[in-house]
Structure formats: C-alpha cells, structure tokens
Length: 144
Image (cartoon, rainbow, N blue to C red; front, top):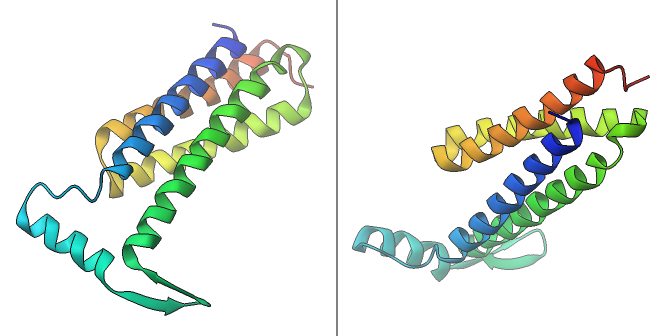
C-alpha cells in the first residue's frame, strides 16, 4: 500500500478518535451512580488558587480534555498534510512521520495504562500505519 494512503487512513482514525474523545469528555459530569456523582461533585465544588488562577479540579480535567482534543485534531491535520509530501521524498516529511508515529505509540501506551482499550486500539493502529508508511517510503527509496 502507498505511504500516502497509509497516512490518510491514520489521519482519519485520529480524527475519529478526536470526535469520540470530545464527545466522551463532554459527558463526564453525567453521573450514572451515587459514588460517581460524589466524585464529580468533589471535583467541581471547590475552587482553589493555583499559579495565579482560581479553578476547580473539574476545570483542570475539562481543560486537559479540550487540550487533548486540540492535539488530536492537530495530529490528524499534520498526518493528512504530510501524506501529500510522501512522493517527493522530502527529508522533513520523513522526520515528521517518525516523530508523529513515535508520539502516537506513546499516546497509545498512555491510553492502555490510564484509559481504555478502544481508545488505545485506535491510536496504536494509527501509529502502526504512520510508522509503516515511513518504512514503505524507505523501502521504495523515496527518502534521501
């Protein structure tokens, strides 16, 4: 399979991950049971000062969620854009593909440890496709 197609599939997977992640963390305050509700209330009920701002732990949690969605969206865009450069054999494209691929592996491991298998599977599949595209390009001697 061509590197361009592999990277575009990876980009679409990460975009899907971004959409599902954003939906999922936007529903985190919906408490399905009393213990969960107690935790949510604890995270959103008390504000405390930290580095010049007064926030709740829930604010930090939401902020990390939005930051992750922004990062996932950026990764999807970068994968899509760099996929158009694979036929030119650009050295910068190679570096970006390896960097994003390795970052996706780390992100996937983080999801295995701290989140859940479905998210990790999407990220790790995108990581494999991304790194595979680099190996296919190298095999085809498209890198200098």
